Length: 428
Image (cartoon, rainbow, N blue to C red):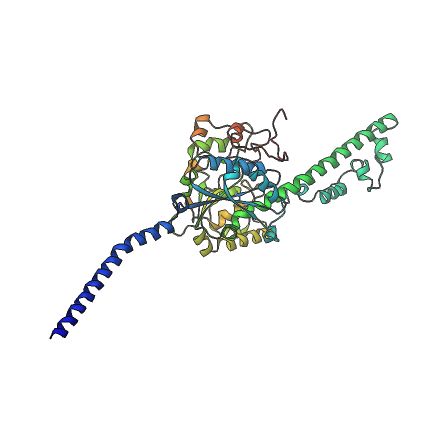
């Protein structure tokens, strides 16, 4: 009996010790779990959602991208990650510009765009052949123009013909001193022609690069991998509001993108009328073509501007938006489907077709545009101060002259440390 009692006491003691051990572990596990949680938790800044903003940096207008980035960075506390897209030749320049200026604090990635993806998908603009192949255009001029305009000057020495044919000299009485004077004038004109073609050749080089980068917005999922939602901005904008507001734009279910309607703001209607801009599909699509009529889109349908986009990458990929856009690029090469006026640029027309009736709207104050359509037409200062984003779409850019509201843009411009990019001003 005594032995059995001893055993029971030992078992009871073990049971008490076991219970105490369990309670001890439970009491001490709470702080441990909290400590682990604290270690694993990111700082509030790291937990904050990243806002990806895509901007292109094109040769010849890189200062535009810098001003746009500067305006965004200066007007928000949000965690912005800039994707700066350029061609191989421009990437070193934009990187050095950022790293050697006050923008060195921004978070950014430089992405190279390979223009080979556009091969066979861009139609040459037949209405402006001199901007595409100056040499060929000169040959066309030579074939159809009077020989007197084609045969002088060292640059044109390959053209074997006299300055003025004898018959022409006699008919117009251009003999002796008059003939010599005419020859000198024509030689001068010929020299100016070749100088102009040389400048056009340089212009073409820059314009081609801009045109290639216009299509970056078609390939957003290929450039931006890890983000669900992305903002794309043209380079000729400045942002005066908090970019977080634009990022928070709600996209309806099934919509891959949000844009600004060209008829969305009554205060811009007068600007549209005064400079003769197109704000309907008629200005972008050639309704004489059967393929366009078959779309069933009324030519009076209000267009939208793709210079500011809020995009849902999951929906974009699900709907194969890039493939659809490429299809309409290819069809235009084959059938010339788009209006020769191209009021909104070469990238607008395919987007109008693919996104027709399937996009959400951006707050109108987040895309005040048309500032680059006329060097004379101006918005009121109060209206511009209230705007969240300003867009100098059109040919009159704020880094060039003439242009309007340049002071608003220049507030955000950061000079090029290398000195390559310079503003054009009346006194420069």
